[in-house]
Length: 329
Ligand code: SF4
Image 1 (cartoon, rainbow, N blue to C red):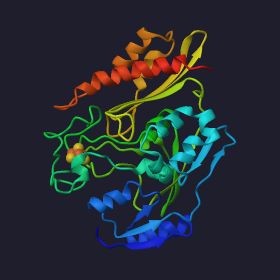
Image 2 (image 1 turned 120 degrees about the horizontal axis):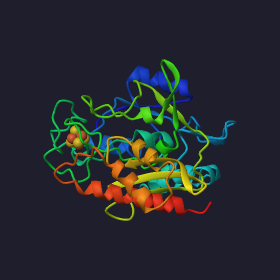
Image 3 (image 1 turned 135 degrees about the vertical axis):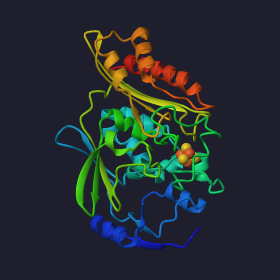
């Protein structure tokens, strides 16, 4: 590991000033960043420790939603009463990720900023990785790509976003609150993550030195009938091959509205707008769910080793919708 400067920020503005001065990275739970530094993937000139900023509250908003400060740990968030009662799909998603020990350290803000676990990105012995070394190529295209994207990828990078939490936040229409040298701004979750395009090294919409300070959730229509289903190679401590977050509202025996997103199949949480539209007005059941599943994977482009993800995602959509629609409430 290379040497680096270390600053302990006393306030949000102090942290931003330090980031501007040093070009350093923000340190919260460190569960991803410190690993990347050990591997030599990330080499920030400074770490700006956010540990003394607080930013650990979860509060109800006047609008009937919830505001989550960025420093709330994943464990605290998943187990918070407001989240368990109003947004159980978020609780499910968080608890499906990592381990208890990691969830006790990892924060809400950091979860959104975690980087892909593509093995070529994580191992600097591999020269080709456009995300780590822009212009070097993509070793996964013709290499090990079983876990990679089938939607939204580019020739320059076919990596997936690893976050479970972000998939649930996507169907909840979360808004990311950011502070930076240019002031404060709010970024809808659907605009927060970037597709690789010609710049796969850029994962999200943050500008240099911008800091996530919180995540706002509007009131959810899906507190009762929602589900997060994660399919992976082993039951715990594994990233999703495919995951799906769904929420439905039933009225007079038909689906009045639906929200759906996939994880593990694209460079960002993949909102299933066509599937949602296909469900509205339909009676909940296998016929409607199969139509939604077909729509979910239209346009999928598998790589040499991951065509299985297409049918896996379809089946996951059907299963998650069945569980959500059948949930009590
Ligand atoms: Fe790098 Fe992306 Fe290719 Fe993986 S998929 S090797 S992260 S460029």
